[in-house]
Picture (cartoon, rainbow, N blue to C red):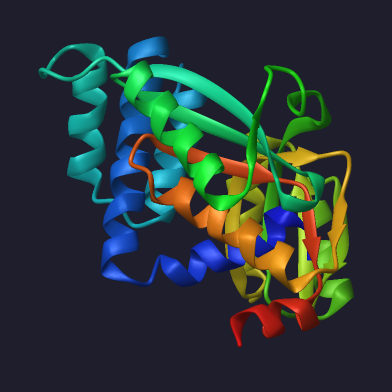
Length: 248
């Protein structure tokens, strides 16, 4: 599976754990707050906030928690000012990583991210070194289902493409319509395992070495575990067979 698809599945499984769920909530709330600060608290007028709101609700963040985050962003409640930073780097095997951060202390976060790369066998890269290959897309993963049913529901809802992804399907769409497409697929009785606006690479690095695969996943996990890191995007391709070997 591709970096996005495989990692989305792993994060979905992690999300069932209380600790991971708590971290996810904190990251989503911070994203909502920043979106409100930058574009205002009106969900209808602020497209970024509308997307972040839908993302938070999809993860079952309580509405009153989201509303308080919006009020902190607009200044109605006291909040922290966060800076948005994107770091770039490489994991073993030449795998590209793009890391989105929201932080109230640039020096602290930069040191923590650099330390993760240093300890786990990766390397930081200069701005633009890997970012050029990524573009924002909406991606919906469907666990299973008949191809015709998935195709019909997805395309009718405005999706751009449907492709096989392991035992399921990967639906690609404009990021602004990803949740509409998800709802249409669910209404068709399909099992949607994840839906998000994400960064997708135009290049894919196939990983065939088990040690490299393990190191890549450790770096991804360590970055995701950092409170300031909001999203980690990559371009690795790990087969299901190799993934099973890594898990074993």
